[in-house]
Each structure stands twice: as structure tokens, then as C-alpha cells.
Amino acid sequence: MGQRMFVAVVPPLVVTEHLDAFLEPRREAASFRWAPFDQLHLTLAFLESVPDRRLDDLVERLGSAAARRTPFATRVAGGGAFPDVARARVLYADLALEPDESTSLERLAAGTRTAAATSGIEIDGRRFRPHLTVARIGRPTEVTSWVRLLDAYEGPTFTVDQVSLIASHLGQGARRRPRYELVETFPLG
Image 1 (spheres, rainbow, N blue to C red):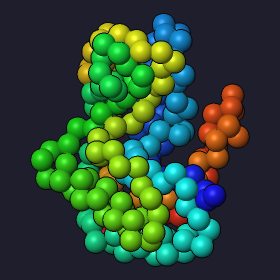
Image 2 (cartoon, rainbow, N blue to C red):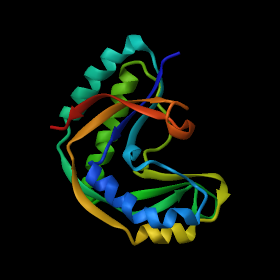
Image 3 (cartoon, rainbow, N blue to C red):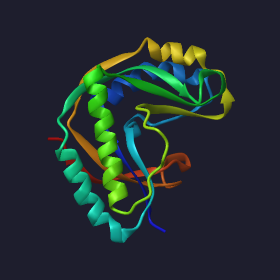
């Protein structure tokens, strides 16, 4: 049994604090499990079990994958819900991406997934859908008004210039949430 990890773009604190300030006065209106602003991230690859013996190889390959990509600018803007607004289990903030930025992000995600797979680590096979989870919802809920609220949101621009490998320790954080531990960061370019 290995470590639960993920590879992510972690926006700068100024970006997540801006989104947090937008959501803060509205949170009491719903009994969602709100994600702490300092844990907001954009998952590129989810790695359920990374064996210790594979970690060095993974780190090396992720470094190479990141180095092949160039930094690009984006911002948090808009929102949505999984699986859909009528039966949402996850409420998320979206990214405002121009077509070339979208391609850059998709290639970055593909590169990190390939790095993990080539290291012999199983990755979550779901299609890459860029988003920042802002809340989890206990049972399927209609969230059209929340998605409209997020659609009115536009955060500050930031540069995606690195990716992070993060270990997720289930139930070890505040209120039995996961505790995240930064393992390594990899600069783009």
C-alpha cells in the first residue's frame, strides 16, 4: 500500500484568498462541506497509491514533464457542478482559459499523467476537467443559484509556472478532512 498523492497547480494565496473573500459571506446559506481556501488546487493527476519504491522515479519524471511546458496566465472565473447542477455532489470554480492556454493546461495534465504511468503508478482514468473544488455536497442537490453566483466571479490573473506533487493524508486535517503535505514542486519551462 502506497501513499495517496496528486499532482496539481496550486494558485498563489492572493488568488485563493480573493475567491475565499467572495464566498465567505454566502457560505452560511448552504450546509456544504466547504474546502479550506488554503487547500484549493487544480488536480492534474490523481494517484491513489504511490509505492515508496516508485517515488524517486515519479519525482524525476514529473520534473522532466514540467520542464517541457511553458508558463501561461489564467484566472479563476465562473463555476459549475459535478455531475450536473440538478444533482450536484461537487461545486467548483472554473478557470478562464483562452484556447492556447486550454491546450497548454491539457498538455501539462497529459504530461503529468504520462510521467506517473511510466513510473508504474496507476492514475485515475477519468477525463481531465480543469476545476477547483470549492465545496462537496452530502447528497445530490440542485445548485443552479450557486453556479450563477460563481459565474459572476472573476479572480485576479496569475501565472501557472509550476506544478506540485502533494501527499493527501485522509482524515488527518481539521474536522477529519485530508491533510495535504507538499512533497515537491516542479518549475515549468
